[in-house]
Length: 504
Image 1 (cartoon, rainbow, N blue to C red):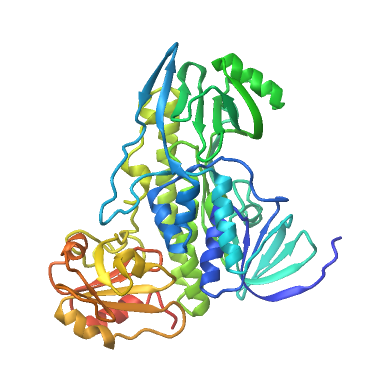
Image 2 (cartoon, rainbow, N blue to C red):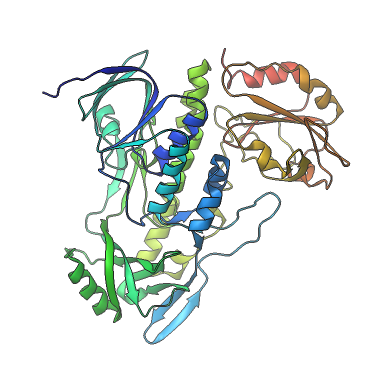
């Protein structure tokens, strides 16, 4: 029996899993001043390219966390596809390259190998004073009305207010809850994923050999490619590096060398029946697993964490427990829809359909909304362009130190925008507690000039993008979604809206 060394009763949140989901959550909680530990059973950080597409909405999350510039520097744009058909290589545009707009500053997917994404987030954790504890597995836990007592492989008992399982598709946390993981795993359909160097292959194309069911995507700022080879039913691959090089040469006539990572992927499409069990939560692949098509899995996990982080912090500060229930209510339908989309794309690829290569607005995840959920009633007031629960768009404005709205949103706070004379007059009298996340208030005015807590819409684009035709208060949640739209009875309506978010 493992010896118990000590019991830590001063941890707010224990996170199992240090991939993109767990690391995003740890960073968000740490910047809110919570006491966090992150454990991971792996001996070291992940070393492969695996999930390599960072969608526009995730880029906005990374900007809020202060790491987008690192991601942009270490990543790059997706190249055109190059379809190899006999001796001919035909270019194919998988996805439309869009120009930034005032409301969507990052419209295109970013090509960034997962090991670099992990490293960027881990450096952020280091700056926040939090180290990932590798080689430490969660072996079990017991939870009660006051917290969770977890047993680690070190023999330590950790007492935390909450436990989050971000420990992947084979989640030990999910298994211990007994929650069902509904879906399918097709053991007859397997794909080799390999990181390596290919001699003589141009790096300006995502090369695809449809007849060989193979592809090679150049990884930015390196000489490596990520290779994917779809296996035939019953094919058991030899994972020896020499054997893999021989297989690739037989399929394409090209030389593969310097392999650094190999994995065998099986289509595994599953969704957990609940995201929460008492004080235990699931996020990322622990809650939903996807096909790789469409670059949805990592992004959905990061956004799980972004949704959960501020809610945990508010609950610890005294907000109603129903705020934590909204995590499942908002994120589970999103995951279900994403699972369907990635499965559709993967099936198209299996049929060698060119349509399966195309990517569009749906994959960018900018249009995902929590409209109709517990924090965004379908009958709530709306503007001409926005409903409660929608993503709060960026917009040009003039304010101290910035000319864009996203700079004002950046950080762990709520933001309240007042449009019109009536809303502006009410702004300083609205009640907000000192506990939990702060509220930053800004009156939006037209004209020119910079004045303290006012922001100037000198182009009219902010008012147009937000669809405001008269007086209005717009509350923006810490995760960048519209929390409330108020058009009358300012004080009472704001107090009612705030009840769902703030400590009692």
